[in-house]
Image (cartoon, rainbow, N blue to C red; front, top):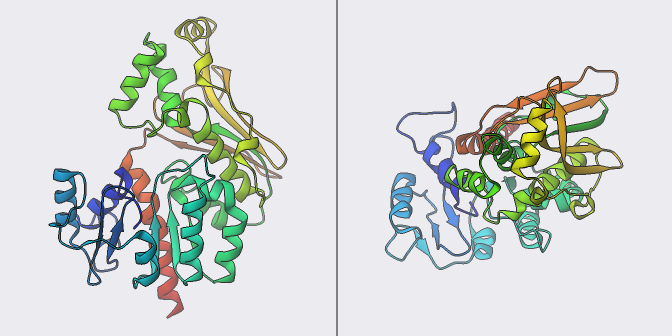
Length: 337
């Protein structure tokens, strides 16, 4: 596992829980033999790390030091190449400025080594989807990324397995929990700054808040959806983005008085995409999507509109997206035997 932020910690907590929380996700089926981080140390044990001890240690010291069982000075690159493992779980932080170049390189290296890859990192799939998809196919390995958009909501699983033959024409949605929460809190009279403080307390703000407020998170998710639905390579930097800075509590009040709400909405089609602030009326399907909830509306040719709603997701939902992908890989390996 590369990266040990909130999602990684929750994943380990679920794997080593006293009782099985998600069927099939337990130490009988999965061995965690390595964790590597950019700034907080790394661990490796070929026979498997003891997850509860790892979590307890990290919660106390916030980094892995030499006295932690399994501590290693080996770099992420060394562990990636020299270790014996089946799946790379890539959970490192987003490097937007460099178009996720280093993370993409690691994923490419793992695939070339014959490893499956599961990631919640939006960057590689937004900027380099076609290259990674091709490489995974050439290596006959799975590249899965259910947690990149709407946490554990099975968007890509649905597309692969239940929309076979369907041609998606366009989609729209509310995909950024942070800005949706801010708008909801501002409806209660909070200033943008107060609303952001509230969002931080709920731990739903990106490490760099501008990724949320300047529309980058939504743009990356939009690019991933375009890449998958339309089998293309959308450049997130080319997607027009609105800035949350232009909204005020007064704007919110005026909209409510007119029986409308402001929403941060994405739109995507084969040749275009955009992220922006829009007003919606009471009869709009996005009107009642409040707080951290998300919604995705998919329009496919010859089919009725499909709407997927995620109600107030938590970090467990994000971790379950990783679990879903790992269990899919496990099922495939069993079927091959």
